[in-house]
Structures are given as structure tokens and as C-alpha cells.
Image (tube, rainbow, N blue to C red; front, side, top):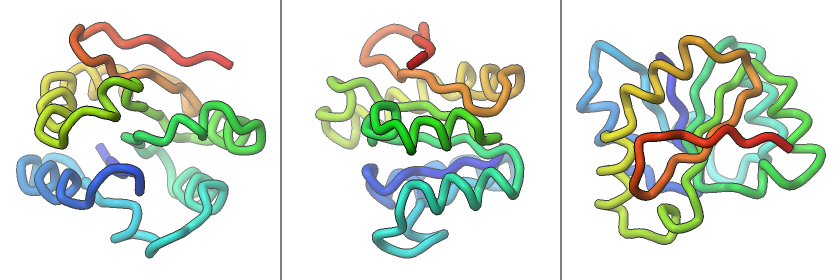
Length: 132
């Protein structure tokens, strides 16, 4: 699985996940891949052209801004967005939840069509699909 950690989450999260899943998954941070300040429409378009990527993000704006939402929904990407509470939590809690949900993320990424978006919850293992 190819995983992009969005700019709204720390590069340390991507580094930790990359080290943990070395040889199994490719995990990169958005800044590592595209540099600082790349526009959402640019990276969404680029990764979609490359094929199937999983995006883990704290940027819920993508799910609300019409142009970004349309671009993501028509892409080949699968998005997992931290819930509001999880986004405001400490990094250790965020990483703990991503790891707790990793198998669920893998399963959803394997069966969903591109453009699907899910919310990563603070406590449960049940993902809510974001439909706008």
C-alpha cells in the first residue's frame, strides 16, 4: 500500500510508520514528496495519475471545499481523515489510533473505489464514510 501523510500531520508520523512498515508499505509525508506549501489540487491530481494511494490527513477542509472535494472524489485516492477530536489530540494519541486502525485502513483501501473518504474515530474501530 502506498500511503501519503498529509501536511496537516507531522513528518515524524510518516517516518515512524515508514520505519514500522518497511518492506510492506511505502509511507511518505507530503512535504517529503512535494515540498512545503503544495496546493491540495496539485498533489491530489499528481497522486491520482500515479495510481492508488491512501491518504491519511487532518485536513477536513478537503471534504468541504467544493473544488478539492470534487477532485478527491474523482481521483484514484482513498482518504482517511482524522475526526475533529483526534486531530486536536496529542501526536502520541494520533499515532496510537492510526496503528489501532491500520488493518481496517488496509481492508477498506483494498475494496473501495477511488475517491472514497472515511473518518478515523477517536475511540471505536468503526469507520464512518464521508459522503458530501
